Length: 340
Image (tube, rainbow, N blue to C red; front, top):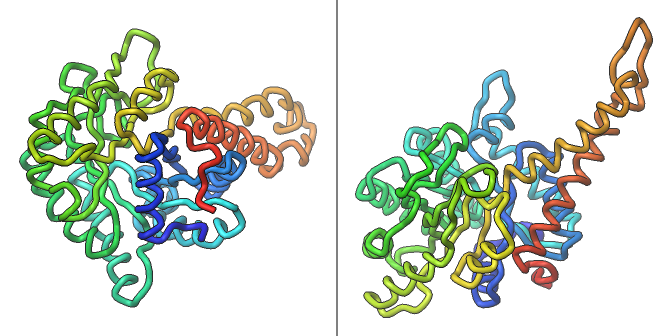
């Protein structure tokens, strides 16, 4: 069962929450980065989450038309085939989708899964993200309600981001300031609008100073302890302990202590993109610098086919990214927790 069924995905998240570990959610933009993520999970004996952002889907759709849905569907179908060869279970997820891209990305993908479920099958993706952090909370949650109803019917889990994550990702950007901290009132309003599971399961990307990318020490103040305040505030009002399944956005570059605190406070998924991008590209840069006169036809020479063959440096890139994914599993305590 390499691609999680809806039931298994729910089990994965339940196990993570109960065991106080989280799954690395790895952004991929190609079949090769997909293999790198799967390899990293397999070597760590950890299940995991593979995700595609709007920009990643557009890249996957090809530069001739840059069609997001085509790119996302194609890679998801590819994943359903190749993941069979890896001894782990993964869920497929779509990352950040703002309001202006819903009709060109998440809603059509929901329709694909709705058709599959009506035919007696499972959804193509196991979860989708609605990023309404640039909208007012009222508008954010209103759209969230519509998407959650459709997701529930298609056996899909929705991820919502209710307040901003700093930095920039795929054209969505927020300043690094005090707005990057979700309040208890924000969390209560979310529970009132989306429920606490009875209207459909959702993952909550609450903000505790998160920033996309990697910044030098002192530029970002993460407060993962804030997640406990949000949980306690909602639990006190609704009488449900540990009410949220939290997502840690902007996980690249975080300290071990910050990650540990987040795990203790209910984080079940942590997004990684910047670190894995670097881990993929760094071996390629090393290869190019070391084999300059082989990858280029310098001074009328013919170069070396073995060094400029994309398979040569592509294998190095895959191995580098896989190592970073395996490291992430260790940091998030998911190593060795795969569903047998």
